[in-house]
Length: 153
Image 1 (cartoon, rainbow, N blue to C red):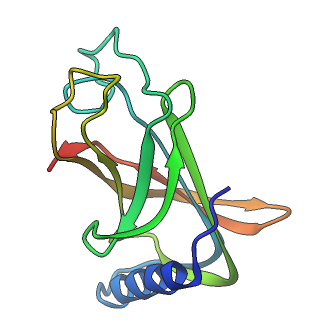
Image 2 (image 1 turned 90 degrees about the horizontal axis):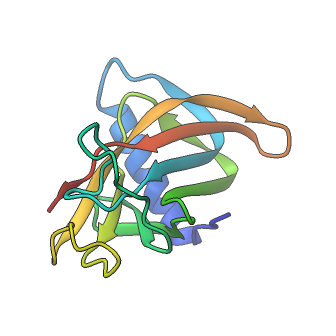
């Protein structure tokens, strides 16, 4: 379980609340944690696609959760043996989360030696998308988000 620093928590809170204030159609919820999940595979763009029937997950790759236009790292996790990642960010005092918009991304620095199909330099970046909430008895209300499709930047 990843634990963000106090500065990172403040920054994430600032960006989420700022993004939440701007749209008039925003749906705000108060959560105790945010869980970010995703998959990184060895393909031309890091995504699992129907054309990629033999692509395998990339194990042991550092995945960053970033905000502020992908310039501020909130936390880092490592993909498991199947290429999946799961980061849980706990917030002791709670967090106001905008379910319609998130200024945060999942980023992966290239190159990845285990995959020659990926570009040799740059960054893979995927937006995070709100899926829903779940109540966990120990934590409380958790916002579930998933990484979208990676693009090379």
